[in-house]
Amino acid sequence: MIRAAAACLVSFIVFPASALDVPAEMKRAEEFGKSAPTLVTRNEVRAFWSADDAQLIYRINTGRDEHQFFKVDPASGRTSPAFDHELLARALSQAANQKVEQNQLPLEQLEPSADATTLTFRAFGKSWKLSLADHQVSPSDRPPRGADLLAPE
Image (cartoon, rainbow, N blue to C red):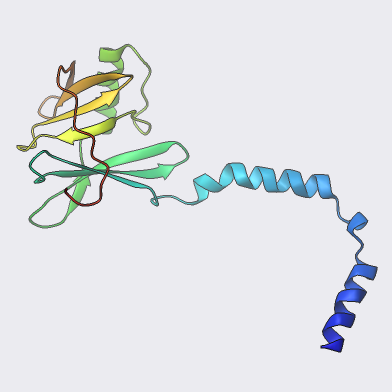
């Protein structure tokens, strides 16, 4: 116990706080804080179920402000891309007259159809419908139901 106290006292004498470059250390910590989200990926999952809870699509982060969408085959449990991200980005960009990147699709409240042929979603404050057969995006009168759960309701 006495040795530990003596070691602490010696460290304060030998390494005074003024020897540290506090502003530089604060800057280094700030820079790390900015890059930390890109170091941890695949830790944010948002699930979207069809109205009958038979279809599941989930969104997972793949980098800073980047994500991808995957569908789950209910019978086998296998996952695959939910759609062609590049084609959807082009189609949504054209339909909404907004720039859209394939790894930053602004899809919210995504709802797959029970027959897995269409997706309804919100983007840019509007409801949209994606035909999975031809990747055509069109405005939709029906907003998708809000579902952000890991299991069906």
